Amino acid sequence: MDSLDKTTKTVKEAVIALCRRRCASGGFYDDYAARKKPGFVSTCEGLECILLPCLEFKRINLKSLLKQFPKLESCFHDDIDYLINRSKISDKVNEFEFPGDPYLSESRRITPKNQIPNLDSTAFAVSTMLHLKTVIKRENPFKEKFPISMMEDLIKNGLSQIEKKHIENQGWPWGGSSQVSHIYFTWSVLETLSDVLEYDPDEELFDKYDSLKAAMNDTKIWIEKNILNNMAEGKDVGKDITQTYLYIESLVSLIILSTDKYLKIADFLKHLLPFCDEIAEENVFAQYQIEGKSATLTDYSVIPLLLRGLAAVFLDFGSNDEFKNRLETINYKKIIQDRFDHLNQKRTKEHLWAFDSEEFELYYTERAIEALIMYYNYKYGHKIKKLSLKSFKNTKEFLGKKQGIN
Image (cartoon, rainbow, N blue to C red; front, side):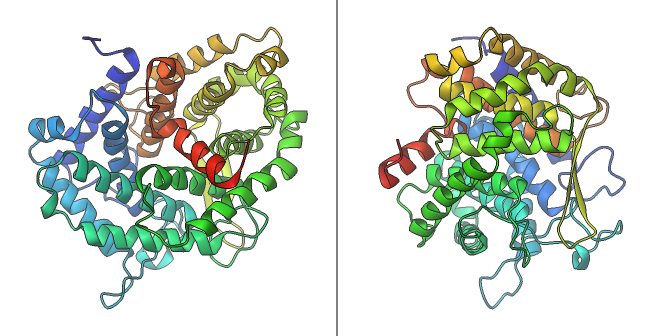
């Protein structure tokens, strides 16, 4: 294909805009933010916006970006140094703590002391360093200049925290001393574990993969027993937006974990699909209260989440006749296409994204790019010999072969 398909073109335009922004500034941050300084999680998000497309699209690669933006290499060095120095607790030992700035703080004034370490930040940091390490080793002729060993230390430490924080027979909490599983943080961790299983196939970065495999299977059973039934019954779908968010995050989690409960998922979709236009048209958001803290996470990215969840489930079950028949006459293909078109309408003038379509938001842009990667797999997967990371194909094969899941 000589010309770029629409999805690749859309993502490439965003990557070019992000590279241009990064080379002209001191880091990654949002237009609307009063604090024009990089944060820990926002730095991860900005890097992911560039790294994921380099890993997922043949027509987007780091070599061409470095040629177009020579300053980008030094920016990557600065970002790596920032993430490592911001999270490393001691120069004497390889110990890291992953702060939630600029999103998770116990007060409006952002300082290193009031940032709340949490598993979402941990997951972001592990994925970002893993993606950067993979891209550098795959494409960059200057890989010897990057601190690969320090990047690996961060990955290992983050995976160790994830492994230790799992709650037996449940999922993952927000962090701290919490023993209450939260689907938002569980979803975030599972996304990262799917990355790790893709890019560390020889299990070189961590020595407790058996424990992580057991945790993932525990989590699948927990979601199926405690959340999926409510999803299938449509409890509060389209009425309580935060609950609807959590259901879609649960949906993606189950796809990662290779559930076989596809008829219950079809029942959930029968409740969700008729509300998609209504949910997406409103300026809705989800708020996640952090247990025992005054901090609250606010998330406006419902349109990317809808597209990503629907593309994931129909990529997985779209060829299953029993699954499709359960949906009766619902035109799911049109609904998914509408979500794709709507997401493109949310772009800013420089081809990035924001929930208000005016000012650039980094989190929303990162989620949009992830959604477009999944949509690309959904739309063109039958033509691709090896589906990309975000199809979760490797995770399914891994869990199926090692754990005997059908």
